[in-house]
Image 1 (cartoon, rainbow, N blue to C red):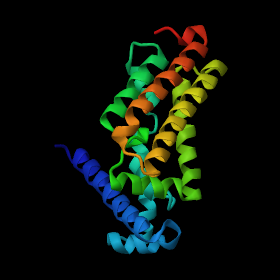
Image 2: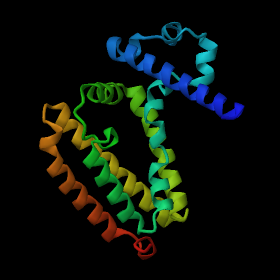
Image 3: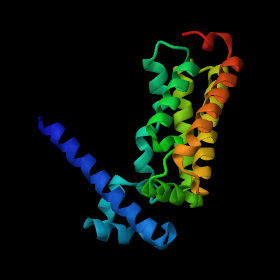
Length: 205
């Protein structure tokens, strides 16, 4: 492996390690009760070094879902199907494998992470920024005009609401296996309505 490749792997491991340490502390004590300095000390790095990797405290948590930013745009760009159909298949596949981003996962650690994320106002606000960037990337792939931006906004909102509904039910005590059938049916309905309301050019591959 090249020196550049090794540096990138080392950098990625640093991101993952520091994020995991921070999330563990936040889950144990609460997001607001843990300082950035405390995270840096636990990770055995300096505070300035931590800020080079994570410009904001919230980024320590959001790093865990950073790979999903732009995912919708990638799915559409790589598929030969109509955009909504490609994203419908992708979301249903996520439900099938219990992808945490769909909300249909009852692993205790996943539930604890979601409770931290959705229960902390500053994290919700930061996650909204990620959502906006994902929406902008999708709109660009769909054409970049007003129709594309409206479509991207609708698509991202549907995915977000479906995932939140799944998480809320599981957080309330339902098992993922018991929620799955209704979650799939809800996704089918939602994406079906989306497809019917798309501009004609976005209904074609």
